[in-house]
Image (cartoon, rainbow, N blue to C red; front, side, top):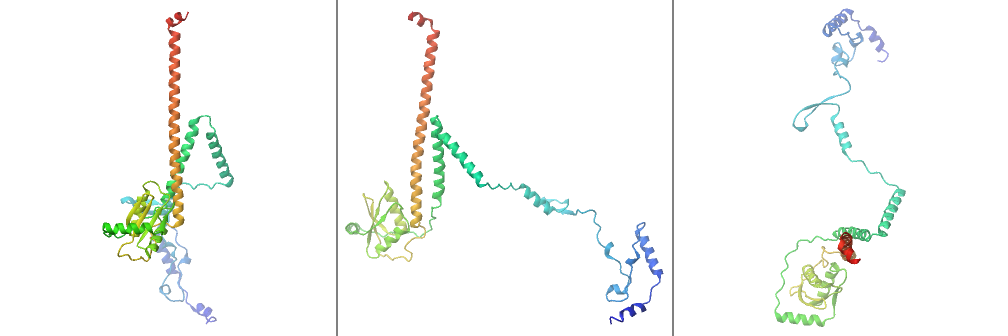
Length: 337
C-alpha cells in the first residue's frame, strides 16, 4: 500500500482554475477592500474521510474571535450593580489584599537582641540609682504591677471548669448519731492531710480509701488561713459526697461517708488538679499575695513622700512671705533701731 500511494495521487484528476477564481472573487466581494486570503487556503483533499473530504476546506484563522490588545473585558456584578472591568479582576483583588496586609516584622539578630537588653538594663539601672526618690519608687511600683498582671494570667490556666453534677442529697442524722460519730472520729488516729497544695484529686482519693474500712475520717488542714477551713469543707463535700460532722478550732474537719455509701469507680474526680499542678498553682498564688503586699507598701511610701514634698513647699512659701513683710514694713525696722 505504501508503494501504491504515489500512483494513486498521480491519477487524481486536477480541477480547473475557474472554480478557484470564482471562489476568490466571491471572497473579495464579501470582504470589500480587504486583501483576499491566499490560494493555499482553498485545498480540496484527494482522499480521506469526513466532511472535509467532500468539499473545500478553509483555514480556521478567520473563524477565531478578534482580540483587540492583550486585555480582556469582564463584567463585574459585585455590590448589587454591573460594571465593566479591564484585565483580570481576580488577580487585581488578590494584589489589593496583599497590599492591605501589614508588613511582616523582620527577625532580629542575636546581637540586636543583646544590645536591646543591655539598653533596657542600663535604663533600669539609671532609674534605680536616681537621686529623686519618687523616680525610684515609681519604677519599683510599675515593675511590681507588671509582675502582678503576669501572675494573674498564669493562674487563669489552672482554673478547672466545674462539670455539672447531680445534686447531692445529704442524709439526715439525729443528734445522737452526730454525737456518736463525733466521738468515734476524735478517737481514731487515721487522717487525711490538706497541705499547701490545697484540695486536689489526691485528697478525695485518700478519703475514699479511708472510708473503705471506716465510717468517718479526719481531714487536717495545715497551713490554713483564718476562715479557709470552711472553704475546704464545702469543696470536699461537693467532691466526695460526704457529710460534715464537726469543724474543730485546730482546723480539723470530720467527714461521715453516709449510711448507703458505695465506693465510686473513679475515686479521683476529673475536675480537679493533679499533685504537680496544684503545687504550681500554690506557688503562683503565694507570689501574687506577696506582690500585692509589696504594691501596697510602695503606694504608701509614694503617698508619704508626696505629702512630705507638699509640706516642705508650704513651709518655704510661708518663710518667703514673712521675709517680704519684714522688708516692706517700716515699723519693724524703726523698732529694731
